[in-house]
Image 1 (cartoon, helix red, strand yellow):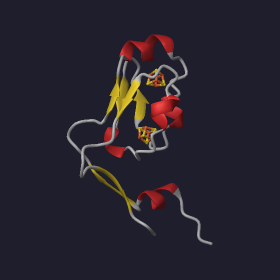
Image 2 (cartoon, rainbow, N blue to C red):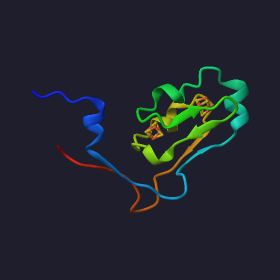
Image 3 (spheres, rainbow, N blue to C red):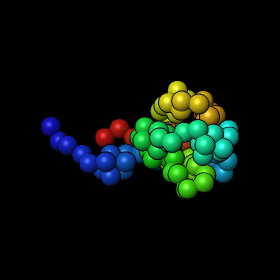
Image 4 (cartoon, rainbow, N blue to C red):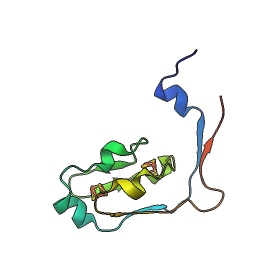
Length: 94
Ligand code: SF4
Ligand code: SF4
């Protein structure tokens, strides 16, 4: 059985990015003042969420559409939608 590292696996992914994010942080103050663990920066497999010191950066372009952030944010502070039709991730089978 062959093993692949994450870079090799990501080669199987293609993205057709929209210009508008399908992921929205509803209130950046909640991230700043109520969420010391910033758990979204840990559970997201695509490392979409990056804490920039005062604000959560959302690199929506790399989202794998797994849906984890719909339930993973303890404050329901992430609005999650599918990307607009024809956009988002495309999985290629190896
Ligand atoms: S887990 Fe939710 S509240 Fe916490 S930093 Fe991430 S988006 Fe903000
Ligand atoms: S849907 Fe999954 S990959 Fe996309 S931002 Fe949320 S946790 Fe990350």
